[in-house]
Image 1 (tube, one colour):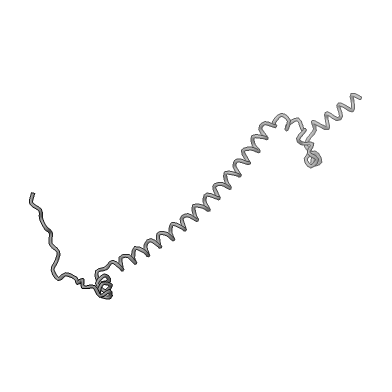
Image 2 (spheres, one colour):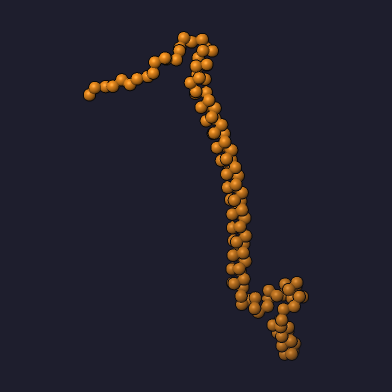
Length: 118
């Protein structure tokens, strides 16, 4: 009976084979039992790394989307600003007032400042 136990221990502690890997027996190997904490740490760090990568990719996509939206809004603001400038020109206002039939006219005299004595 002693020979059978020694034979089992030798097979158990012997090299790693494909059969032990595919069968899951590799996890019961002495090396893996001694290094289980390190292996768990490596697995956790790998999961954190993958999650961090996906999070950064999501944020980069969001940044690109916001940059495009900002560019569109800037162009809209520029368009509105140019329309406002066009509508507030003196010639445009004079045309609008004359179309409405109001008695307002553009002054022929330049404006002047009223100075206040102290």
